[in-house]
Length: 241
Image 1: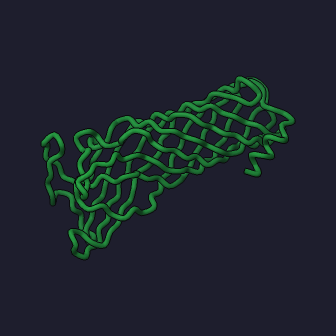
Image 2: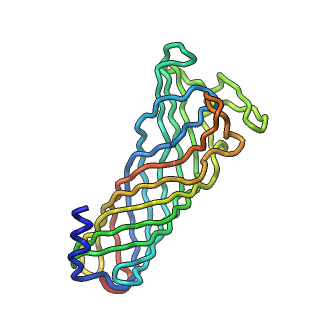
Image 3: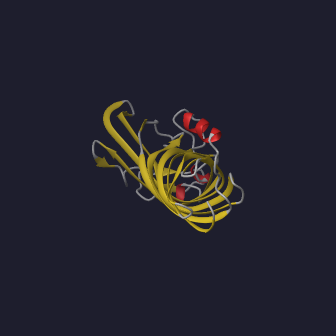
């Protein structure tokens, strides 16, 4: 908040109109809100981590405002752990790893001094599923191939299968907010960025055939969520700072 206030009160030189491109890399924690365990007991959530990168392009059309987009890959998912199964003691672990191609459309606000700017990015993000895999073990032994269930369409499936891409919708739509700073290292040409990005998916990520009742005989939609710390480098193609 102190950074935000300082940025608003020290607007001595704003960025002028320009095009720019950039590259960013990041790492953070990612969640699947409301686990889908196909009717089995739910497990405790564990912290899940993943990295990603993106290419960014945008245009500042006033001294403070711009429109930006990105194309990037982010590794997401959720880890689970429990010490019982069907009431019996057991070391149960499940890890879901998903990979999405993300294309956000951001409105950018920036304000600050000649070299350092507070910035905020906000907008929708279109997330295209690239892969979904899982590991499911009990006492260290894989459960793949041990159980067979039927989904809502009556198709038999293995709840512990390693490839589970067909159980997720191909598109998720999220809301993203990114707060950070831009620091120029070459005037009018090159700057470094650092920021924290939070996102929440509004759509149910489970495919309709796998929107199955949970252990309490209810169904709750699953949503992607998380936060990532990004750092990047950006180059002004044309225009002025």
